[in-house]
Image (cartoon, rainbow, N blue to C red; front, side, top):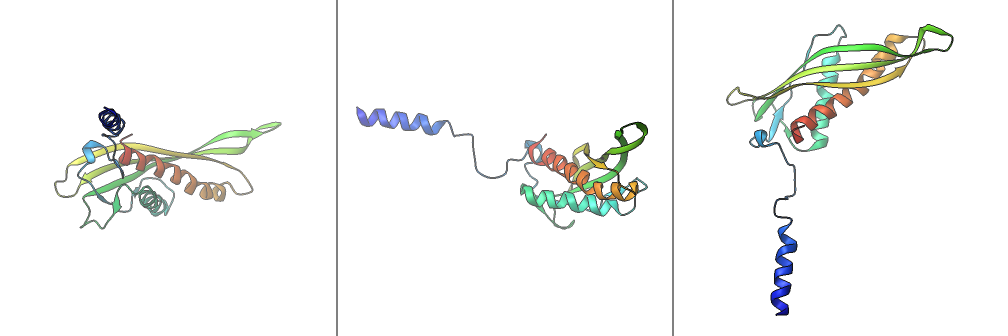
Length: 168
């Protein structure tokens, strides 16, 4: 009787883990995708050389996440096409005593992407992703903004990769 009770207890305790498995868990609609190619994103902004920065940041985030393998366009299961739509800078904090002088800015980066299955050309996923950061102003606002763009690109890459690897 004790052996039967122990066997039933063991069966119930292991039955709770039946739906779990080790490793990356992709969304159901991306279950056949194991590798992604990430060509350089298109740039619709007036800021030069930002497309390579954003594309490289997304690739590094994919590698850090580990759900999908980065591959060449010819070897990949899907291709991630991206377009940098907008970079906006808005004042966040003004100088005490002079509201016309800004001390801190918010920087927002917007990218529109599509994940396309390479073999069929079918669009698997598409969305708009945002990344933002804030920066303080020194003597040169343009240089300060340029130094803040990688931080916004990093946050954007985290959002993009989590949408594709987790489904939200």
